[in-house]
Image 1 (cartoon, rainbow, N blue to C red):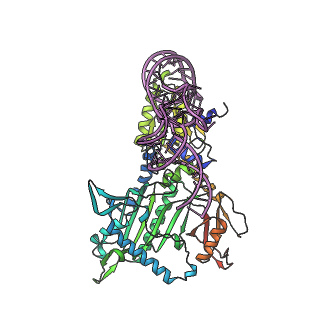
Image 2: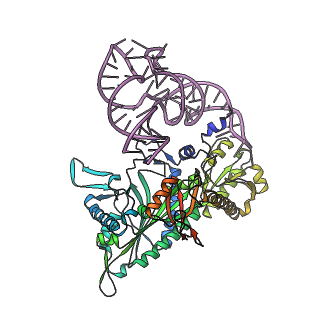
Image 3: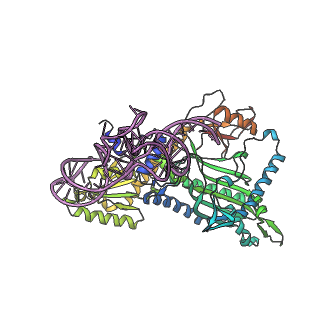
Length: 497
RNA sequence: GGGCCUGUGGGUUAGUCUGGUCUAUGCUUGUUCGUUUGGGACGAACAGACUCUGGUUCAAAUCCAGGCAGGCCCA
């Protein structure tokens, strides 16, 4: 049978990303999609461990930047939402009054999450007087408490974060890690004395995101979102988009500068040095399990996943080969794994009673970056045989195993890094004029300095979406694609997930 | 938001159009035993399913209605 090989592994070619992705998340044991609620997958041990590895990097970054972890309740009473709604309504009116209406887009959604939340209306046999909803995000819950915590300028900055589950009633098609109804969510919320301090926080957030993206070797773009794509209640929003293999962008993180808008709605004030009350300035920084979706999507290949070493649930799988021929094999495997574990590597010994070939495929599908084979021949020569998931095999000396393994993992990291930037360079191309034919799988870089109305034209004619102003503008002025006016504003057009 | 489609063991699949031959087919997985073990071994035995509720009928996996769940396409 010609496709026997493929059929047995059951992995569609990665070329066909829409088939590959949903297949691989199940075949590699990340999730079980058979749980009977749309958009709520079961995390399997391997998938959860991968997520935990990513979360650990996040925890480290939060620790490094003096954020403190908190944990807020899942349920929020409905009446608190009214403060938020009033704020959103207020901002909307201000925006409508302050901006030329011709420049405003008419298709703005009703702001807020109200339609997309799950409600709890009963408790036991009783109807609740005040219904509660499952948090879609925690602004409302947190900003109800912040005023109780902040008294004076000495309490600021307040830098908190939590990693929790949030809920959104998605009506669109769901996809593991990418669009789900129960979201594994990271959110940092901060409060500061003034706008400038809050702005510095935004800068810190962007630095953290960049570091995390680098650790996970993800190709990304950071853009200040257009007004209509700004989070309700935010002064501005910066979106971090990963460029997936099919050229679609996936927003994996967002950072919001709220100025004092939420503080006014929730009465979050502090006493300054002169004893006068001032409103705080706040920021939010959010990420989700989409990070894992991006890691899966970006690095995997026809043979399965490839985890970047920093987030690999198992970094090195050690495999005794033909152990029955020489008792030294298992002994060596034990010693080596112990040494590596003590050096901080995540290790797995695979001594299952299976044909070696089958074990190899297993770990390739699961994306373990490095495999060490130790057999009678290797023991005799004082080697382990190292096979990198990104390609290439070589014997490495056992007496220097820690350094050697580190070196091998570095090679994998570099390879993934190179692939990632190649992908970025290949996907993003310049669009000089609207007459150019738009191609599937491309992201277009443009110089654009037009109005909202111009933007709408741009989106309609290209069938793409504007990501917003790139964080790094052009060095030299270029003619705007619509008006021809010279500008350094660099923007991107893409298909978004 | 609009439209189309699907639901059979753990996975996948035959059977549905045209009700009876279906106490339901093949492959795979799982368990046990034996032989094997440096890139997917083989033999034997066993285990395991018609999405739910209602209707039509002498008779429903099959037809009808609804629910739940899933997939695809378009805004």
